[in-house]
Image (cartoon, rainbow, N blue to C red):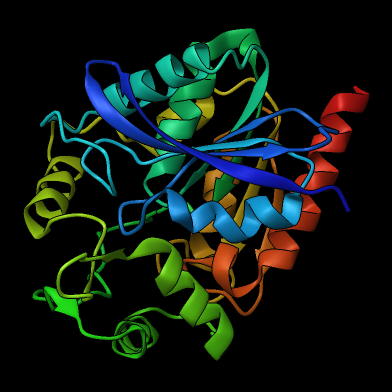
Length: 284
């Protein structure tokens, strides 16, 4: 198995300071992947996947207002997509695959539409697909501001997220997505409560431009979709209507024991299927 290393960087992108984790393989065997995290995490959610993919370059930014990136103050899907497109250009990614998790699946589809021939394919990991009235969030309305220990944060996610988590996977997930305060050593979420409320209010508003079905209909490149078999954000009854929205039916992979984070609970499925998908794209 090829190896590589992370190259963290802070750069000015699209008018704000953005943090980037750039996995650089020692030997590259595939197209690079631009990986966009969801609204409850940051770029560290891709650590396990990138290290296991090994020979695939993965550029993983903290999106605006998350992790170590600045918050320009707006939440349009088109603006997130513009950030990703500008980053791809800055990194000289001339032909790449864009991957998104959760709400970032809408962003990934918009990136693919605007990138044209530069976007070879899209990978969507448990997109938030609602059929009928929006359901209640699985998260408590007032989560703790911080956690004194990894075990406390792990207990929180075990209680609030569906799926079968091993202790090892849960601890690694917490380590990869939480921010540790340098003075207290406490762990906090990779976003402020106000920032998350603002994003959710916008995506639920009439002004929202996150309509997955509209973006699916505009997609022309190959698409791979993962669904957590125990996910409440992408339930079984939403699978077929979503797939039918695409002109060319995507490949769908169900991670049976996962909730919303199959990248953490069943990473081997993600890695093996993405590698196979990338090989198929190169062979075409």
